[in-house]
Length: 414
Length: 76
Image 1 (spheres, rainbow over the protein chains, first blue to last red):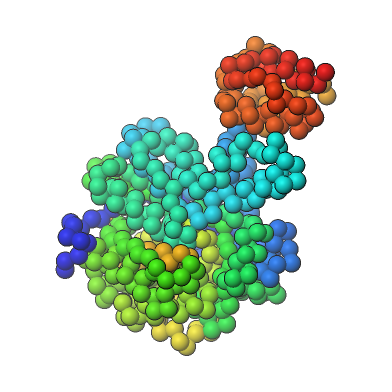
Image 2: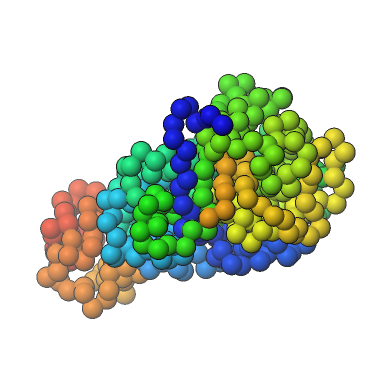
């Protein structure tokens, strides 16, 4: 099958994973929770969100800052801390030693939608209440959306190409797709890629409430994020980071690395339709997925599982599932892990691609938690109640972001 | 707490400088206080000691002793 714009097929090796989410610390705990828990445990009602129509979100909890010494803490806002912790885990998982590696052959691409939005808000308050002389000199240095990538570079002495990337809720997926392109172009041997987000912000959540994007199930927050369910009423923001180590296949082979899976296709598109809403027929998401499948030289029949964007908004789940059905058919096992992690915005693609890798490795599809009554208008086969063992050779990760950003990845077994 | 103690505490608890490394002769940059960190420290000292260091000329080449002299003179 021809595809990929006439380019050679390319399989980037996934050799390491790192996860820190409201579902758990580390890959092991995350995978255990998303495959065995029937309900999320990480939904909190933080004081910052008091009295808002959506006053809850998925939080990682305590102990993040404490993982860093004082000197490191002052240089890392929380979204960067999460990225550094996940990157450390991913690099160790890959069996790579930053003290020994050729750092100029290591690239870093990390997405985030909101970066240091919370700290920025705090400094805005300082400016208004106490004047410009009291504004922290760290304001720019901690909050811009490149900070997570830059922090990971410093922490791991990765001195190759590095990029912060923002395609809102598609950021993590795009980061992995573009990291693979860097490997493919020979610009690096190793790429640390994924996404991070930490935005427990009264301002941002108030705004998202006003645009009617968030669930308002305040009486039962743990059941609020319920992708593909007939009673879903919006998404729930989550905090976390998901980072992958990708390698040129020759590089992974030469050092005898364990290959967890391969990223074989990537596609991206923009709806050019609306600032928030997806195209009503999912035309952009379809183009991204078809491009990724052409790049991977696979057809719908090859795809056994989709870790969907599945945000739990009425429109996303309908549009996305109709698109998946149209492009892939009725057979793939579709799941959304967001009911366990929340919608981690710029981190979502990193976290969920890691889950797609684990699904391939373990031949197991996590269930969509909280999916009690499947929406009859959703035609794809969703997995619910419990994880489903399946023979999986090829899986897909889709992301649809505010701004009309769409991204898709195709992965195969290692 | 006197000024010396307060500044020394800020260096260790906010900037992560090991306590035993702080001596009057140590240049700030040798303690890891670069120009960005120095501006952060300037703000912290102003807040904690209620002094105005806006016009104090300080660089990372200055020693802890010189920093303390600037704070003393601002507090005078």
